[in-house]
Length: 591
Image 1 (tube, rainbow, N blue to C red):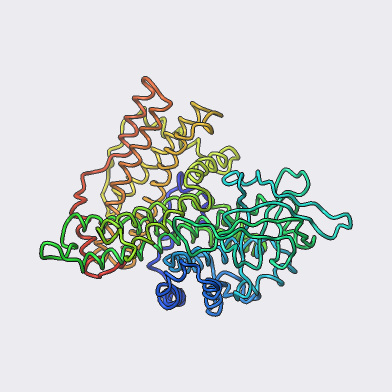
Image 2 (cartoon, rainbow, N blue to C red; image 1 turned 60 degrees about the vertical axis):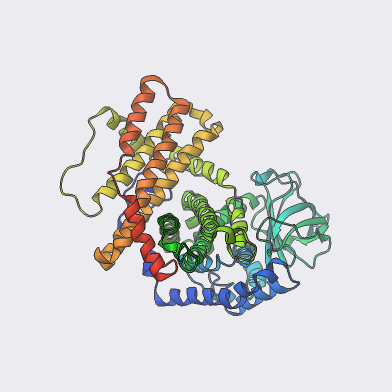
């Protein structure tokens, strides 16, 4: 099996046999997923109002219970009291628990940004001291990066650390905000600049240290049950051995942990989306209007099908990337790299895909909850029904872990930087596409197989991206970084291309496993997704081209774009009906 590099999907054809699909979970993984689901059903869903009211001690108690079941240590090595499972398995747990509203936020912050910086960057002594207690839930963790004047620009933080004259402590002063789990955390990973350093350093700070004070809980639009506080450090004395990693390595830690956070956030969003879709279907089956269930009406069926198609596509991308990260990690370990470093490097390698998944997953969830409210009708707007909380809780995901705008720009920026460094050959393929524009279109020849049409669509989507991105780079050069609208257009083309290829590969592999007859609904979902993606890519490409090209060049590129986003007529109404009939019959999201 060849290990792809991050971002390489744009210039390389991936084979279906080389992707992981969720239909391949083994029995152990299914059992872990069931444990997570049972935990939510038993401890979280019956208590959502109490959680949102921030009942004293409830969230820490839930995290303790999760710790007893091992849910806080799924990816923690066995030597530190965890299960030591691979990245894809930890992703599955994240997805299922993603349906836990505010609890999902608390557990994600604890197991992700709370625990992983110490696990991946800590010394042997730091790991031995902190990780077992974090894995068991005895200690809860929080991550302190954001400040009032440094959000997306994290490295501009003002929190300062100064070494004491005896060299034994750092004295920390500063303010952090939007700190998830802040109200009950025992351990904080805090980012600060030592003296006048250019870059941040990171520190492990225990709640028991002097000089730590908290503001009251923030009142938020959604995720009301997650503890969010401002934290102040006033002459907080931190032992020098609690510096995490090297001096000035904090920004790198923040960026790498955010890569992990992004891909996990996409997974959690899909878990929440599935739960909302199941509730939408159940309500549509129960609710009677004009003498029949509203699930019998075409307008409602369209909504249910669209929810499912977007979820299925996004999930395909998530587990494709998760397996890529796992494979890259394994190959680095096989090459002699130590485990923690390899896990970071493996994730860093797929930072482009992590940003794509964060954007796509969070926007799918937003669409799904919006349609959920609509399917519920008047009850959707009632605080007595479940869509109220789902709708409000979803909104933060487009802001968390770097806003979707930042992640879109990062997607393009990281790709171009890799091309400049010679890690990705984008210019060669882009020049080929430019040459193809001057030639006679290839109308396809030879025998058509089941997926040849869809593979041609995906291949053309990639050409559309390369054409627009390549010409934008040539035309705008160093100015491109300032043209955010064009960067966003290109990012949207890349995102749709990656997700389109992911769903196509998933369905192709599924057909290989189960046969075409058993996959009729999945084939319809794939066809509808690719059909709609072509229109989205065309629109984004057109906006970009019209922003910087003119005259003959503009005309030629618009003709090329039309060629690369052309699809054959598809009866999407019939296809969506097939999808919705299956969901309505199963009375839940069932793929």
